[in-house]
Structures are given as C-alpha cells and as structure tokens.
Image (tube, rainbow, N blue to C red; front, side, top):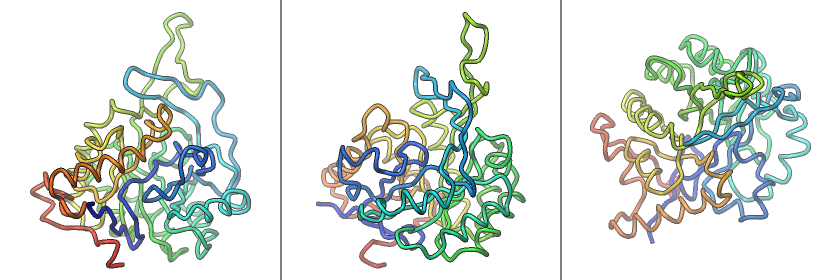
Length: 316
C-alpha cells in the first residue's frame, strides 16, 4: 500500500487530509461517525480571545453548488476552548491545529501566547481571511502589510508552527503569501471562502441576516486550485489546499498544483465520512498508479514548483 505520511511545518501527518476550520467543530461532533485518528490532522473552529456569540440568523443558506455562511466566529474563547474542548481532542490521537482569529494584531498574539506549549496543540492556523466579521479577519488578509503584522506578532508569542490562512478576495495572492512567509509563517493554507450573496425574491431581501457571506463548496474549487498553483510557485514553504474538495480526485488536483496537504470542509455537512473517503481514495489512486509515496506527486502539474517535496513522516 502507498505511503501517505508526510510532514507539514514539522507536524507529522499519517496522511495529507485535514478538516477545514469551521466545518468540523472541535471533533466531538464527528467522533460517533469514525475515529478521528483516521485523518492527518483536525483543524478547529476559529478561536478568539473572548467568547463570541457570532452573527444573528439566518447564518447559513444552501446554493446550487455549495453553501453560503455568515457564522461570525462563534466560539467559547481561548480559555473556554482550553478548559472544555482541548482535553477530549488530546485523547483522539490526531494532530490538532487551532485556528486563531482576532480583531487586532494584539488579540491574535495573545491567543497564540495562551496556546503556546499546551499539550495536544500541534500548530496554529492564523485566520486572516474570515469574511464574516466587521473587524479583523479578511480586513487583515487583503493587505500584505497587515498580514505581516499579524503573523510577526504571533511569531513573537509562540514557538508553535504557524500556518497562515489566506483569502481569495484579492487581486493577487502571491504578494500576500510572500509577506506571511517573510513575517515567519511556516506554511500557508488557501483558500478561505469567496464573498457572495443570495436574495429571497419574495421578501426582496438578502437571505442571510448580515447580507453577504462566505461561499464554499464545489463552486469555488477551480478558483482554489488556481490559487494553490499560483502561490506554491511563489513561496518556499508548504501549502495546504482547500476549497470544494469532495473526492480523492478533487484532492489530487490540489496536490498536483503544489499542495502538500489538503482540507475537506463543506462536503462534511452532506457526508460526515467525506474526509475518510478522500483518504481511502488517495491510497487507492496511488496504488493503481504505481505511486509509492504521496509526496512524489506534489506539484506534478506545476512546472514553476521546481520539484520541491514535503518531508516524509518517517523523516521527522
């Protein structure tokens, strides 16, 4: 059987499939469907310094090829996460990547500091790309200087590996990614959702209470693959690809574009086993194609990727 194990920013993954932040809660919600250690890693919902109630409803609406949401970073705050959610995640036997959000660079740094050195936290995903908050999130992610300020502030407050999650809602992603790398990120993940809107033609009002929301699902996959292709060629740190992945074939597109790992998100709402099916499909595809290690095909479709490969899990 093919070897799917590799390392991302020093985190050993038994396979390259993660969950996307905001679609998997804190893992407990899916524990009745499968053992979480079948995945390469679990990425938590976004965590802020203080608890947040999120945006008023309606907050979610289905579209023909995905979902539009405006949750607004509802979460128990970093201390609530450490007390109530992290203990059960430690027992799952899977790397835990905590998604960190804030309304200011100082808040990001403080959350990173409180998670530093905690047993069970393998890395932080710095979310500078959420479109559903009035302060912070995507407001930082569209400006390379703001991204650098947030990442550098977190870098000073933690020794944990940093993964910076980028927004597609910019003209060019490469300058933003380079700014994150120069500020100290160890990897980048992309893409977060695209900003969209659905209007109820009877009420003549937007369906979501906040108006606009973040579009995810298969509709955004081609955009996400192109973004990974562009960014993987522009930076030297690992890329994690996400956006509309439903099947192993979808994941392979991201990997061949230059992603060392992938994350499954919206598909989990329709099929809680979607991420596990992607793992199984990748193994079957590699076996069928005579690929002995998944890292061999990272960037296979991207000449500008220059043949860089992630480390094997056995090398960490």
